Amino acid sequence: MQRSYVASIEDITERRRLESQLLQVQKMEAIGTLAGGVAHDFNNILSVVTGYAGLMDMKMEEDNPLKIYVQHILSSVDKAVYLTRNLLAFSREQVIDLKPINLNEAIERAKKILSRLIGEDIDLTTIPADDKPTILADCGQLDQVLMNLAANARDAMPQGGSLVIETSVAEIDEEFAAHQGFGKPGRYAVISVSDTGCGMDKKTQERIFEPFFTTKQVGKGTGLGLSMVYGIVKQHRGFMQVQSEVGRGTTITVYLPLADGEEQKKGSTEEILAGGTETILVAEDEEDLRGIITAILTNAGYTVIEAVDGEDAVMRFEERGDTIDLAVLDVVMPRMNGKEACDRIKSLKPGIPVLFASGYSDDIIQQKGVYDNKVDFIAKPLAPAELLKRIRRILDTWDN
Image (cartoon, rainbow, N blue to C red; front, side, top):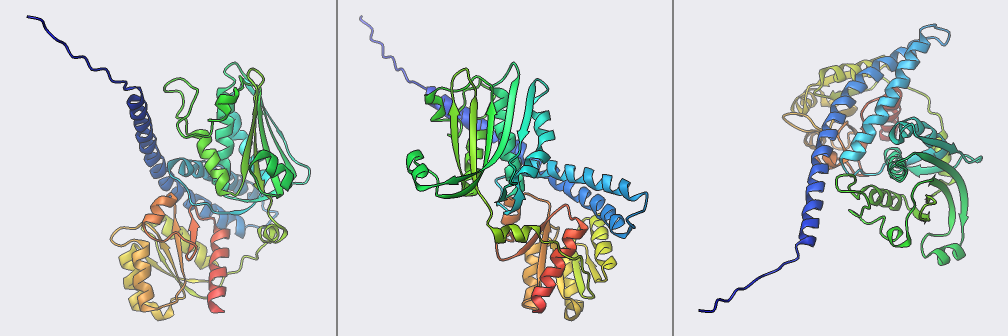
């Protein structure tokens, strides 16, 4: 008897590629969740350190020989804050918080971390623009752009080389935009990141900003770094250019709109640290952090009513709401979160100003329903000067 056989052949290359991408995303999500939790706890600790050190600095005379030690503590805390911001930027997509930033200073501040990131066999040089360009940007996301571009350049120079980060100012006209096919006319701050690495051919250059596209070996790269950079730059109303040649290195140029005169003025205006005599309700479940917030406000002349969580805050408000002028609420608290407590408080006293505070990443804050343009929010760690400025500004606006 003659036998017949049926063979079926299926190309599963694409399915395997998609499975690999899914596993990579799941791994990054798990790492991101861990990083976000660590950053939150670390922010609470930093709030206590920067709070007490800040109070000491504010109370010391300028000629006090111990003042320099306190300032060193504050400087170290600033570096730790920078690290936690990077953890939060990595852990979740961030809602951008635009502030005037001196681009030269931002790059110089990031230089030390970038040097550690790229390694000792790569020479890092920064060339700042003479006219000190100021942009409206989110500090954490700008750092993320620099780190991703530096990491990409490092991987293109496995035997070492040179990395140059240069800033300048450029005027983009209609002709440039028409010729390049992107960009809008105007004045831009320019960041050029140039390496002496292996370079890219035209075909690769066309795809480098695609999510999951990578030329690296399996396990060596996610293909997400440059796509994240592209997304951040687009959020900041900027655009990018790539110039590369195989064997002769790569230059990635980022264009970000310059801040106008009024925006720069707002960013550079010094505010007087004024206290007050109002009564403030503070709801914070971390005892040490609640203690330093109370100390900062009491030292500034305010009367403080403490609450250990959202439910306690509502109870305190029910007892003394007629005397309370402002509520400072942690976003994530046991028994009742900050948003729920805020809703209950406002039902008792409509219009009372509320300042939310949190050290969590922005997606967690959004889940609690408080992060939008209509609420006042301050990120942890809480520096005394910034906390006092924000509270005074809110109270003065409400009084008016």
